[in-house]
Structure formats: structure tokens, C-alpha cells
Length: 217
Figure 1 (cartoon, rainbow, N blue to C red):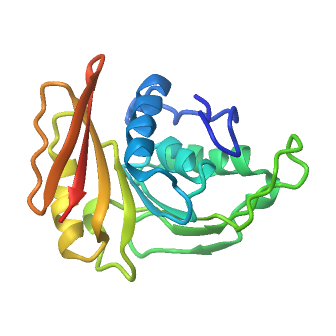
Figure 2: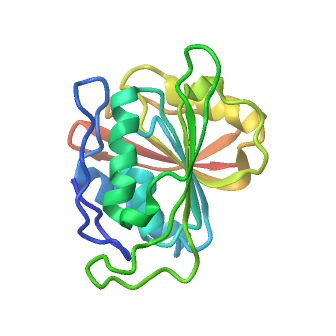
């Protein structure tokens, strides 16, 4: 895997160990972001929410293209380890975690990362503002009310689980989704994505996968 476009174009990414997560293929990710660019025009200043984040490839791609921040939500330990590595591989050594807070009981620690591009990384230009990343090491369904809403929501839930639909409806009620926000959901091509509170903008099939873009009302 690699970053497709933007300031960190070409940076390699690693996939989580094991088979509990399913990274979005580069070609599918490229198709998704082409769909998003045609509707957004620019990612500059966007607040991005990457749900069922896995390796973080979707959220990191958005950051590379100019998004102001991304919150990654993932509960699998191997995926979280890969995500932390990918943040450093993309943004440089000075983007390592600088603060930790431990969640109670069996929930993995919640990690907040403030990241900046490395001045020495392959002579890449430095973003004019410092992109911020946050890792929520917990289930998407365990998220509470949001402090501020998000502009772009990227979901790659387990196939045929219905988890993406449930998450979008729940997070809309909890204030995570800004009015007019775009959401993308990857599913198997035979699945239908209909979510209360959202309008379907477009559906595209890529191999065995289908991408559905929705607009929050």
C-alpha cells in the first residue's frame, strides 16, 4: 500500500498483521478519492473521521491531500500498531505519539497524536498548517457524544455486517456528522446502503467492492 496523491504521495504504508482487518485496495482507494475530489474540490481544512480505520490508509490519504485533522477509530490491537507505524512512515519521525490516556477495563488505551511533517523527509514541502491525528482505540459503537462535528466520514466496515449503516445513523444522532457532510462506505457489490438521515449521491462498483457516497441532511 502507498499514499496515492498529495504532499506525502508515494509514502509506503503497512497492513495490519493477521486477517481481522481488510485494507482497502490501492485501486479502490484511488477510485474513492477521485469521487470525493469531484464533489469536494479540495480537502483543505476538512475535519475527517476514519471509522473501522484499520491501517489508517483512508484518513492518511485525506491528510496528504490537505485535510486539517483526522480522528481514527479502531479497536483491533494489530491494526492500531500498524496505524501508529503508518503515521510515522508518512509524516516522519517527529510525528511519534506525544501523549497517552488509558481507558478503563478492557478498552484499549486512547492515544492522541499531534503530528507535523518531518523537515528532513525526502525534501517534501511542509504543510502550511500542522495536521493533527487522534486515535480512538475503541469500538465505533462505543463512541459517545461528539465535541465538534466532522466534514468527511470514511468507513470500511466488515463486509455484510451492516455496521456502517448502524454507525452512521448513531453518530448522526450523537453530533459527529456536520450538516451536508460527505460519508463513504465500502461494501460488497451486492450490498445496499440506505441510511436514515442521509441521501445517496452515487454508487460505484470496483471489482468485488462497492463504494457508496452519502450526504448528510
